[in-house]
Length: 296
Image (cartoon, rainbow, N blue to C red; front, side, top):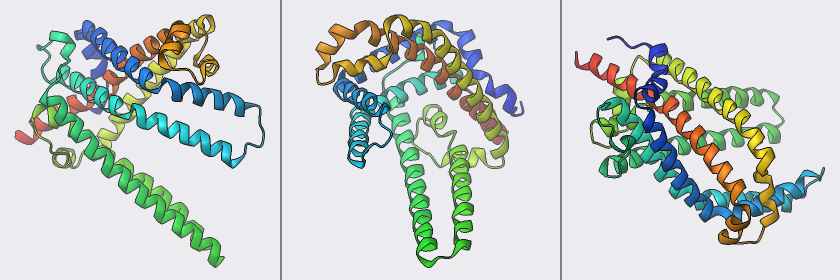
């Protein structure tokens, strides 16, 4: 069977059609982790909402205000990061398992074990390497931009622009070449990010096309759920209303604002679970086909 980017891009929908109850299991996992992340980050989230609401009416926000908002947002991100990484590993492994072993439907393909640890380690390694490369490119461009400004050499700005496009291209290329690292970690039970490079050699453009198609479908899913959630938010109030609970702890917030939190977490759980299937399943399908081609 030859690799077809278009066919592989729709694997997520086939997984949900083949095992619809698995989507319910993934939603439940999202709910559990989502409530855990809300419990951990509720004070910072309400503080962030209050600060954003206060800044909405300001045309000239001070540097101190923006810095404080950035600090709160950064703190919130770091607070929920461990749970977010764990959730991502468990659910991405479940989606990969649904493609690799369709018959293993127990618990909606959700497991917690060494497979998930290997997937988590692989995702962290790949993310850190890409982040490090991105930061190196960014710092190089900043240094080049400063040199262009200080030396008053307009032609250097052309190098900055070309360097920015080259940097973006490099990050996209690396992301595609590493796109099969998660399926490899699950299927072959090993942490081998660079093994993805061997499988994706000569397949960059088809895989990029597949990723773009899957990404477009994930965006469509997100827009549809936004349309569905709009009347619910109008009835119960959106997350902006959480700004009123700034300074209160999780118990106080959940006691007073549980309808807002429930609607927000539930809609995001269903939408995110389906988007995860749409985004991750195609790469696992690609892994199976490309692996068989290499073995042939």
